[in-house]
Amino acid sequence: MKPIRLSGHALQQLQFRGATEREVVETIRSAPWQPAKHGRRECLKDFTFNATWNGQHYQTKQVRPIFVEELNEIVVVTVYVYYF
Image (cartoon, rainbow, N blue to C red; front, side):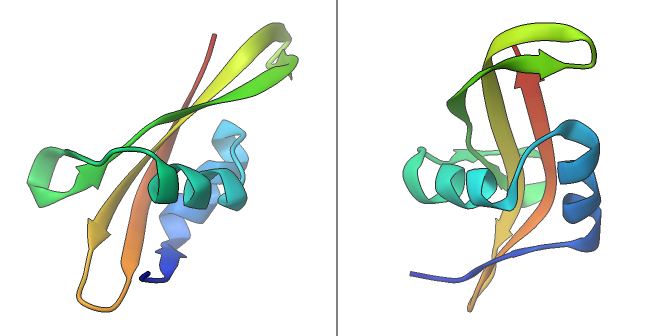
């Protein structure tokens, strides 16, 4: 199993968008991968949230990392997070 490394941009997006590194790793390890733009890959996973984000209450948080699979590691380029 290849190690997963988050780029500087991806780490910034975690704080800005409300995800954790653990959620990103769990998503990549457990969700099916799909092709994304520019030869990258993506996957998504729903997490129980049941909390407030930006002043609104949501039940679910969906984490969608965009990443590149390199020879020795998986590099996360950015992370999108959706609340519903």
